[in-house]
Length: 178
Image (cartoon, rainbow, N blue to C red; front, top):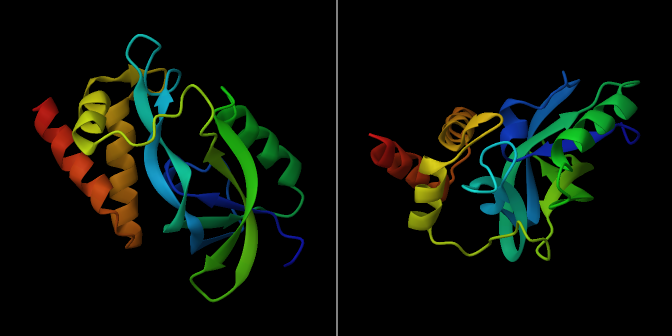
């Protein structure tokens, strides 16, 4: 399967990859962490009231658990075109190929989208309370920012992926919206 195209999902791709994969496997990317470090001015917020979306942010001792999706043979070009249209809307994400450790022991490389820390939409280092307040208040072209957070938290739980920051944010955003 060396010629298989793999895609790594760590946020909304986990629950909405946009294609029917040939295979789904839990995976880990070393040297990266899942973080609400990207301002969303299109999908989950606006320029006036930006939301936050997840990105992979480089961190030396970190590792991010997510899902690796194997793209069906013959669908590679279409899947990449669709992913690029979705993920590269503002160029805050960089498309990279990262090595992954799959839960079944295989090692693959996968296309994924990581934050460009030099981009104006990068906002790494916001404290969790500020993130929660932004997420609770934002709404964009694809709906409430809170919905994005809740869907991600729900799917991480279903997969058995622990993410204490996501759990805290989901609880806090529910409280803020109550």
